[in-house]
Length: 164
Image (cartoon, rainbow, N blue to C red; front, side):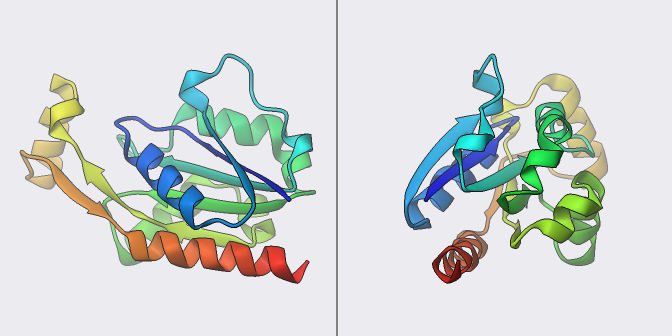
């Protein structure tokens, strides 16, 4: 079984989450950062596709949206997992997840995960820092990446792989 974890990251948190996830995943796993490639990966070579992104200024990265739009028909023939890194928790995090991933893909996916997030002021530009300070009242780095959620997601994906 070949698995592709495809993601986009604004400040590195989604990349951290993807790398952690790959360590818990059984089988052959390839990581692809959509920010570092020219052409989208050929997903027909993979049995399982995991898609991840983060909430950045209220939305998921454009490259993740484009990847899904371009590959939706083929994704619906694969085993798919979806995850989101965000600072919100509970219902608000679920609302953000539902907003950024199309319903057709969410209903098809075998696992969905909310992995927490980070606000990395040291990597933000001036405008981002100003917005976060005004909206969240935070003015320094905050880390809230949830490794337990990442492990649970991997376990669920591994169980689906084992049963097929």
